[in-house]
Length: 235
Image (cartoon, rainbow, N blue to C red; front, side, top):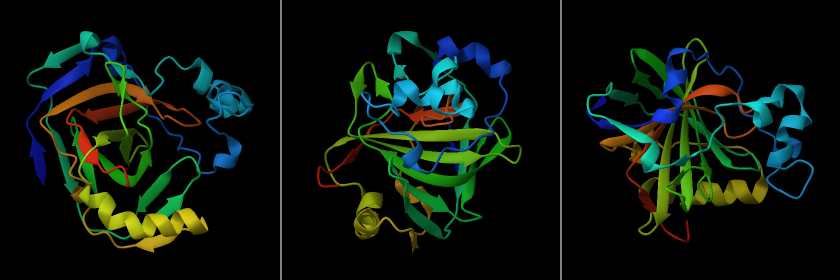
């Protein structure tokens, strides 16, 4: 088990929602045919909230992600609750969802624990460029580790990447990624321990937001790793 003692960088403008939040029960839509990222099109982000009734939060939600993590709006919490993670080797399936690549983990892949609640690892996925920004800066890539508690609450760990040295975990996945991109078919793979993503760091941003794709469900617990990792341009 990894137990991290850290100084949390907490987004103060969303602190008030911590004590009054309800779990995000809806899962991300996995078929991009229902929406896209074309700002000029009728299914682009500015129209997501109008496409389906259950996607209304995409335009009317008050806690929508992603956000710009402005340091002037962040409060440092020296003794914030420790983040615990315990990941284990598990089978996984690689899936091309159109808007991203998802690695769906089988049962028993492990969990993260926050304030005594365990959120079980469900999937990884990647966005390029990054969705979150830090002081207005956007990065080359962003990984999301999506977890869900036994009551349906969602917690996501976000890891940012800039161009630099190759990432070990993505290097292991290269062959599988190319195959999925070409065939559009799901691929069962064995990548071992999810902790190989090397997301651990001593500083985090923590805030309450939403899913970043429809249905844009709110009250998602976000933990953005402060340390920016590297990924090669080829990756």
